[in-house]
Image 1 (cartoon, helix red, strand yellow):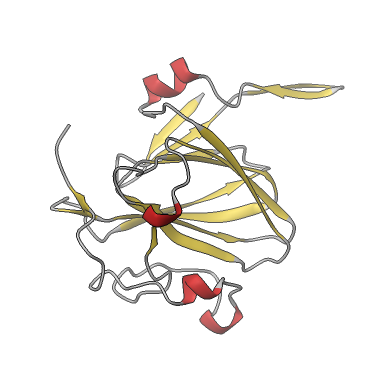
Image 2: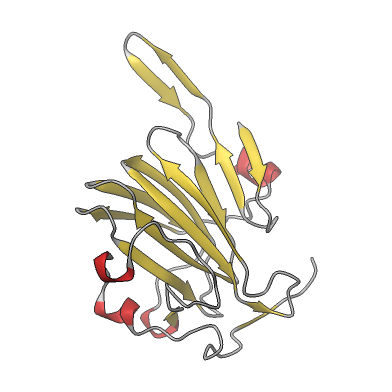
Length: 188
């Protein structure tokens, strides 16, 4: 497996090995032991599957607050996404900064987004399917968001604001300046 740390080192890209032959392929898409060695602090409790019919669909930026904060291990089984993680840990040297990566069925990469980060994605292709494991159960009362196109974040989404397909909720999320202090940075 290939492991790549992004400029915010807690966010990790993992690329499992694909073994292919004339029948197709086989890939170990998750191994608790190997992923832990790579820095993924799992304890996964739930798998989620999201389908987006249109390219330019934005989901996020989402997170859950303690005690139901979640880490997410995201992969794409059909299509492609731009995946974004924003550090919202007050006191972090990278607070308010983001990293992004293209995750697709063809590049077979996964991204680990730990707790303390707002997570979002934009579909780059129609009919995209995203699978992700989470480290805590969905808790609607702890489910929060950050405005996807907040200028303070400087995210270069490859879609015009007026062309993006968003939920009504995601259009109304607070900016980073308006966000309460949900997470505090601590060195491990």
